[in-house]
Length: 211
Length: 114
Image (cartoon, rainbow over all chains, first blue to last red; front, side, top):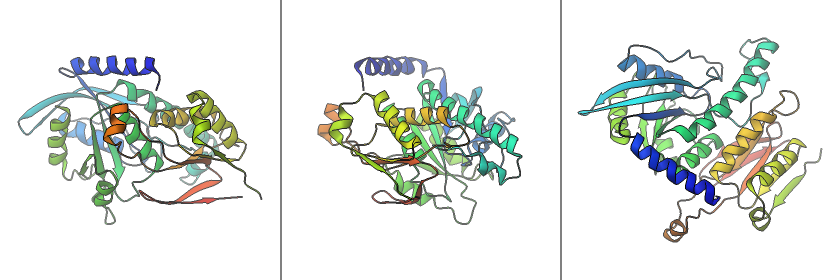
């Protein structure tokens, strides 16, 4: 890493330390279809009575980062106010043919693929403006994907606090234990954002980690 | 069909700037080659590689990359003092040629299509 980048990071960390006291900006990251927007919707439903965006079984439904400011969360006697950034799913490849399988026309599929590539870039850019990250993984899937490894590596390099959410525990083949053993150095909270399972634990950990 | 592999040594990688490395990787991968980096990329370089890949996807000939690497090892106390993280082997190829079959902490099984 260049000296200029190191100095920039140090000042950025110092600035974040001061900003942290009154405003925390938390990014929700993960691969496509892990349940990032479902989690953002769940948090907003629980604390604001609103939703962040639409969800779909077609990958890359969220193709623009969405910001919701001033979400107040109370847990374990603590109150934190956070800005939530729901980011598009990160991927190393985007093939429009994949969307055709969901019944999209070729034109729609190509447009979705183009927007998805822009969304991935936007999600990466957001990493420099965050105070913490919630990384959503699908606990029915193998956690050792390159996207997960790259996100964790970048969060560690930026020294950002991280909570890994093992989502979709309502599904029969879910294995949050596999995620815990893959990333033993980080806090892993098993939840189902869709069904609202174990959300109390999630909010308690959120308040402890980011409060 | 033949598949070309480019194996880049740690010494060679250390002499290259981030942009030189990423440009070389993308050029090779876009021409259908598989690139093997002895000491891999840093997490920041990986993120930059993903960004550049997204910019170059044309939805016809190039749909992205497949990357195979192990999670970063926790640095030793000596490494932490020096602020160094040991890079690990990384394999990068075109998404339509390289496919991950199984990945664990210490073993990666992948398929290369000719």
